[in-house]
Amino acid sequence: MSKRAAAALVASAMVAVLSACGSGGSGGSSADGTGSGHKLTVGFSQVGAESGWRTANTKSVQDAAKKAGITLKFSDAQQKQENQIKAIRSFIQQKVDVIAFSPVVESGWDTVLKEAKDAKIPVVLTDRAVDSKDESLYASFLGSDFVEEGKRAGDWLVKQYQGKTDAVNIVELQGTTGSAPANDRKAGFTDVIKADSKFKIVASQTGDFTRAKGKEVMQAFLKSQPKIDVLYAHNDDMALGAIQAIEEAGKKPGTDIKIISVDGVKDAFTAMSQGKINVDVECNPLLGDQLMDLIKKVKAGEQVPRRIKTEEGVFTQDQAAAALPNRQY
Ligand code: AHR
Image 1 (cartoon, rainbow, N blue to C red):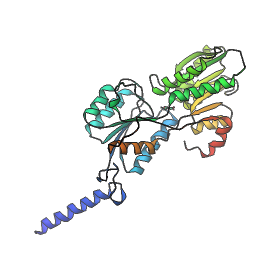
Image 2 (cartoon, rainbow, N blue to C red):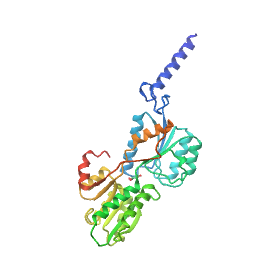
Image 3 (cartoon, protein in one colour):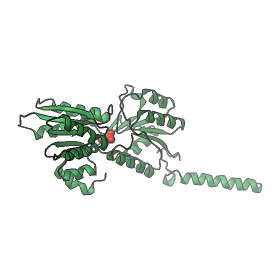
Image 4 (tube, rainbow, N blue to C red):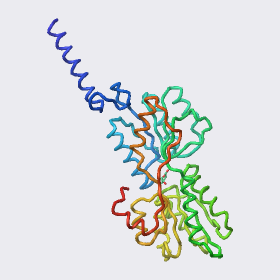
């Protein structure tokens, strides 16, 4: 063997060793769970950075991918469906192993999901669902039951006003129009309170899941509604924005206007411990580890459940104050 051929042999052996080290698995295991030494690449299209919940969810997904030895191509859609469609098309072009995404709205996904299917790239939904009739377009959906969250919010309200007969005027800050959590949290809540005609939703508008919009819409509600007893906010950021509006209007949040919120982020628990939010229905953003496990299974061709629901609770003020020191997000 010539000196040059021997050097080439040594170099290619080194490349092989280095790429094996980079596969993320110890003892020859692989991220795709097949023992093939192939490091998985996942394209992840996130909704945006609209809320504290979302920030915690992004961190959870990124940390979990690192831990699992998965290369994550992360794309922030800034709350726009067209950006998510572009990101998914780009993931298809890059031939990623799996696409995961949290759809900003429920409808309008069939075409791009069909493109992923034709390219034989499995899709996993996380956090939010799509309303597609064709179930073959995605492998699984991991996330909360938003209808149940809405029902839990309604149940708390019904209990609070048990035995009372006066009208209860409710204003509602909805999440992003057309999104699964906005649709479902509204549906679940309405379903529970409709049994008693004293509960009236006197105004309902989107605050796009952001603090700024929550404040702006609450200011408008305070101007247009002569009597507001309860605010139902579809997430904590909108509730926190609304609290500012209520205080600036000279009223006491949590006392003059009862506040029901959803998520359970630290800032909201702090507001609860100060008596400003009355109840918080939990929505868990820490989905990263479960998502990475699911992705590996899907890629390995294992059978996975179509729907995986997150375990969640409901926090009253006392419970929130007790949980606050150890709250992770
Ligand atoms: O999809 C989950 C929802 O989206 C969370 O409740 C909200 O805070 C986020 O923006």
